[in-house]
Image (cartoon, rainbow, N blue to C red; front, side):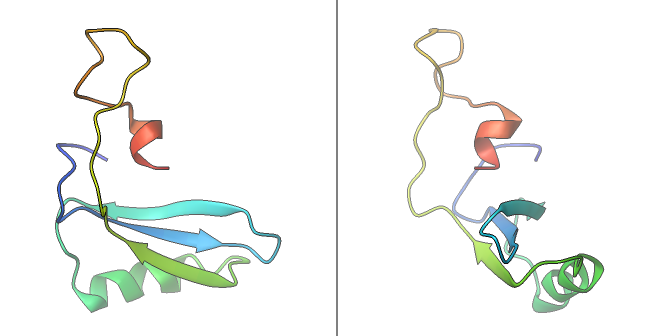
Length: 79
């Protein structure tokens, strides 16, 4: 995911029957339903459920390093 995370940011999560979750897609904007459906249609490989998520709160990431405060890594943003 590129750019800043805002309340318009959305991620599509696929959930497998065993509970394992994977980020299928991300958008820096509120996606149109057709955009979401296209990603779902292209990712039906073993997913039982899909969840379209947006942040309800945004907190700075980091591990105490002052250089990292206020930003998070791509893997943190996908959780």
